[in-house]
Length: 172
Image (cartoon, rainbow, N blue to C red; front, side, top):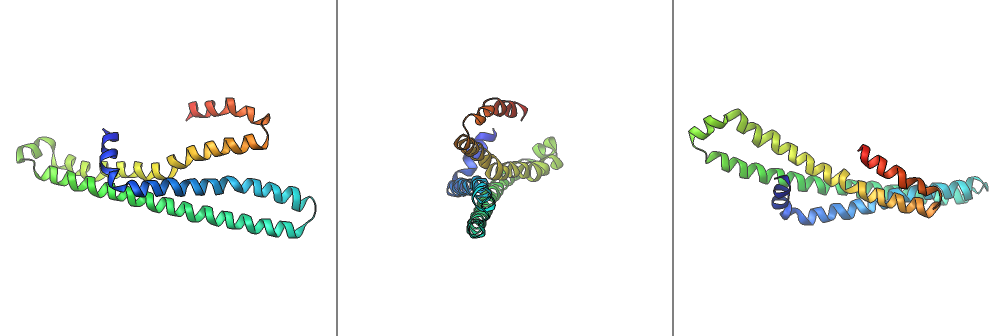
């Protein structure tokens, strides 16, 4: 039921969802770049007492952080637009469906129950779509990117991921 609801009502917001995916990807890549930059500053700047290197790469880190923040904000903005539009459309259709009920049907279902369905239940679906656009899209990108970054740093040490990721997935 939820899949059909999301498929039907998110179709007009397909472009916004694509923007969310793109912006989350860029923000996550920027987020995954920061530890490497920090390590370079420590290895090549602090260890060698090269203040110029520290300042240059610190500026790069600041720029990457700014990119991450801007694209994270854009992803949340477009995800919110899509979820709010879905909520508006579902409420509109539910309202018109309920106003077509006869008095007997309204009494049978109960007016308070119908009001709850139009307000609270739609808000729950709206929140689910918003969370999907922000957290559930970013998490797999972050997981895959994190594994790639870990393998790039040290393949042997990254073998622990073979055991820890399935354990974490089972716990979640």
